[in-house]
Image (cartoon, rainbow, N blue to C red; front, side, top):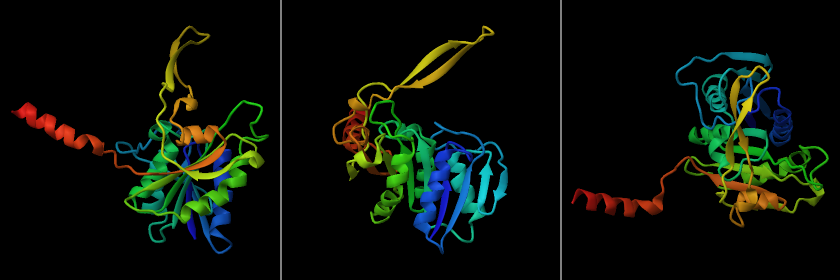
Length: 261
């Protein structure tokens, strides 16, 4: 198996190294692992692409490249340039430092990369690791993904891929032996706001604004990715870039008809 690995935390991120380990196990001794990742951290860029600016490819080692672009760019470059004649069987994005559940899916560069893979017709999986500060947190942040990553990816590869879908896998912030198992579940939407703007005054007197993430995972519906991750499950969620609110189409058509008289 040939696997393309990318992320949004950058080419030097420890989560990328872990994704490479997972990919190597999945690919097997006769497989290939190719890495194309951003040269800098690109968290929170969603599905952005370098549409109005050029990019440069830097080869760092055999089968290892960095791009001065976004995660989705890395997939496009990997598929359209580096592996153009030998396309991968799988795109792995991650392992992201921090979960990508609920609304985070919309903001995440990790899921943006997996989405691009899905749009290009390649099986794609986003991998993300919860982190926490409680007494039950793992000794090392990456222990859950390290312990469960290979089995999670293998499980997803047995699941259906259709309609340009991709999968999002999230590992809970729990000691590996305390993880309750793997489960397929829907994306949740939190009832409470998760981002806020925080003003900050620098020592030189200049004013800045920072964006702070407030997780509020307990406010997501029971049985959703955010809640189940909080409860110690490895969650697997099939996703698509199709955003149509199907349940509103008939009502919208009726409203338009009434407005047009």
